[in-house]
Amino acid sequence: MSLIDNPDLAKRLARAILSDVAMYNPEKVENGIKNDNIFDILKEELEEGRQHFYSRVATDLDRETIYDIAVVDVLIKRAGKIESSIW
Image (cartoon, rainbow, N blue to C red):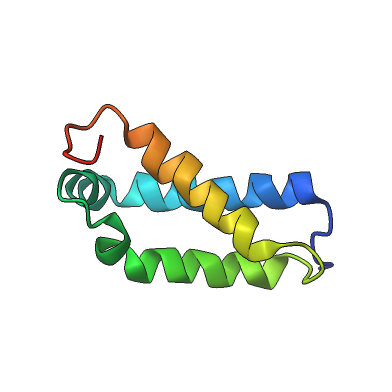
């Protein structure tokens, strides 16, 4: 299998991975937003997703930025309806 070298496809993959993280860990996401510690609570899941993403995407793309933006778009922005002191 060849590595993804198209930025749009890489962004789509990152969002899909993080959608899975959110879907399989709804309580962690909610508690992490409520208590402003989402990155601590989901540390293992986020790192596992990152490693999977890196294994599928070419190194000449800005993999770190693409993944980090997807974290914010999928985990943080979508959780905007959850009551939290961070909003």
